[in-house]
Image 1 (cartoon, rainbow, N blue to C red):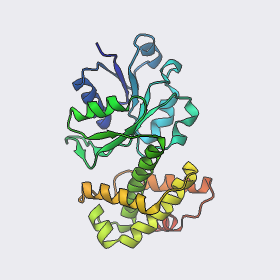
Image 2 (image 1 turned 90 degrees about the horizontal axis):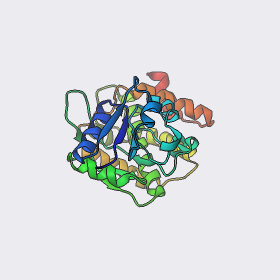
Image 3 (image 1 turned 90 degrees about the vertical axis):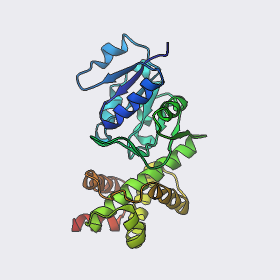
Image 4 (image 1 turned 180 degrees about the vertical axis):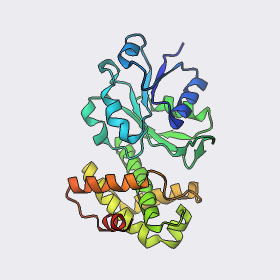
Length: 255
């Protein structure tokens, strides 16, 4: 009998992971807002705890993880970087950069294979494969950081450029008809990612990674519901790090 897996947050993506784990013969325990996590922690010894809350709820959720579960935590949020989990004293956390979507009333839609790294990476990759969602295990933390920055660049660039275009543009429009805007936005976003990680990255490699994701779904809309909040969050962080982000500031002023 396999140990159970705890899924903290059963929204659209959380439900996809839960189905994948069940298909892989893992009992699944969901944690909702009504669950007493400490009571649950006293009764089960889980294989892993996958945190599936939204980005805005992540820090509050991570603070609820019981001490004796801190060696088996996994995360899958957008805009995720090491600074988001480093102060929680997790031991070798597992992180997946999710490249599939799940919207209400629709099945999962894959853009590209989702990279994952950490002690529980193999379980995530194997489980997702059973529901036809490709994922691959990365070799090291440096590869994970690069993949997280690629995803952040993709999300923030497309969302924020979409605010500027205001025409229901998709990523194919963005790369073909608004290439200068795309690169100006991504330059500001990369400046922020560099500050948040204290690392430098190859701009060409990152753009190639973003283009690969574009190819996965050329009709993918640029501006999702979260776009304005992402722009505001980016500008707040820029202020915190004293960064000049002229393109993002200009888009905010005109929006």
